[in-house]
Length: 161
Image 1 (cartoon, rainbow, N blue to C red):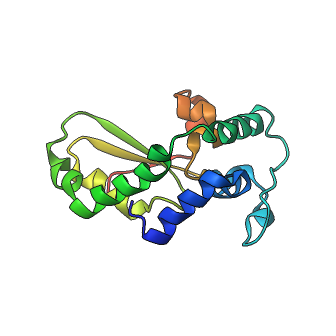
Image 2 (cartoon, rainbow, N blue to C red):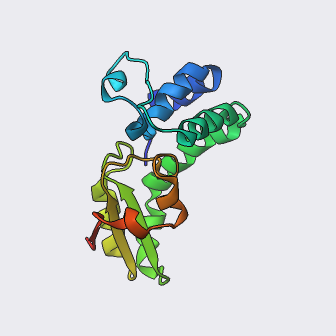
């Protein structure tokens, strides 16, 4: 991922505003919210029936207040440096151990094409696309993310490139 100066400034603004942080984090876990509430200038509203998942989102949101500026700003800055240097991209063919990359089909943050490129470059890498899930699978489908695939795994397509 690469972030421009305006996007990094958004991280700075998020440090100062819980409501802005909530709105941005909602875009990462969009399946938890009513689609109409996610429109520009909307206020994200949870969909019904989330139970403990809604509480988990709010708990994570509360914990972001304690994150240092080094994490808030360092993360996008270092992700941008990595993207620009392409060092990891150049070394992917050297990564020999098995990988399963799990991507939510509603992820608006990481492009599927980037993950397909990574999957093709790494010798033992599979890509599983999870329907109906966004960027934050750990929030949107905690049992699947934690490894309890079972019945949740039906409908997931594997793609090798």
